[in-house]
Length: 239
Image (cartoon, rainbow, N blue to C red; front, side, top):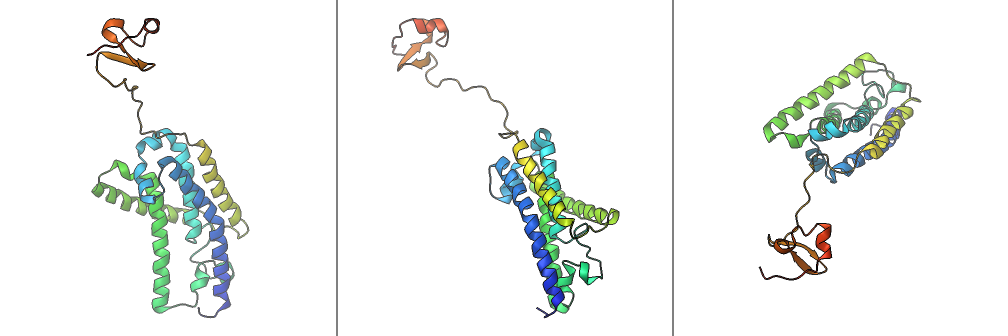
């Protein structure tokens, strides 16, 4: 702590924005965990496949957009914060590091880069299903996806300006609404599962279904599942 009042102001703003972005992040992850039936991020990304995008593409798009807005807010990027501004009264993240330098400043920048990398990897894992590729192509696709996310962040910063501080909560509430609306729209079940025919009754090939503890002989009574077979008196056979 450098003892400057600017750092305290920036820290309070960043905690406030993080508290607004956290519900959108948790709801988006809960939606993905509900579909994947897993609680681990690695298993959630591995469970997603191209079949999910074919069957529930719009719902996944809502989750990705919500996570993208959280990425911009948590990493203090436009439209939430301008990392290149020099006006201390409008800074959020940069004002916390205004009076730092040397190794301390390097560690702060490194931590911010790690957080941006983790959020970009999370968004990439939603867009590029890891379970559909082998390890090496998956690694290349992941690195390429993170690079594309960085390009997307740069494009957003180039085409729009920073929002007013009073508008930022509305943006984050909108991200939470997108993530929350995706939860009830997601269909039950796993789209990767194909319809399988009903399993036949196990047992010897000449025995039909078991009615009241008595196995009906197909060779004597024909199809045991036919309605007329139930009218005959069932008897046991030693096959």
